[in-house]
Image (cartoon, rainbow, N blue to C red; front, side, top):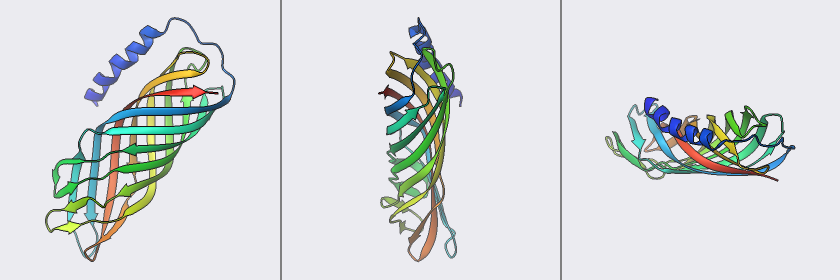
Length: 210
């Protein structure tokens, strides 16, 4: 968390320096949002259930994440959107687990923009939805088990950051997101396994309101 804070403070300070005037009040309306980022921390864990009790876990390498969303700004600080997120998942050193575990998420997000009529707009958000957990390229080492299949499971996430109002239509924002999936049940080698994903990402994006 200390490293995350050290990363975010300079970005937030930059937004504050850029702020010189207040943006005009906005009307309610739809918007599009796009964002790119990198994973600060991402974990994959696999746990066998009866008859297998084998376990494995690993962290992923720093990887690209991307968001695309369409939403509605209610002009009172609240926003609601539907979003697609993609997080790559090449594993680095772990315990008894190797391979890849990319993550696709389809989420409904709600945000509250503090100081929504100003130029600097801190925000908090929560989201719920589904993740498509891909296990096709995951392998347990001992005993050797090749996992297979894609599973859709429930997911939830928390977001926070700061937006900078460039003009009446355009906002640039930077923030952090913590996403966690439920257990994806995978059948392999005659046993059931439960696969779980967690990912913390740092993102920079743009939001355009029509």
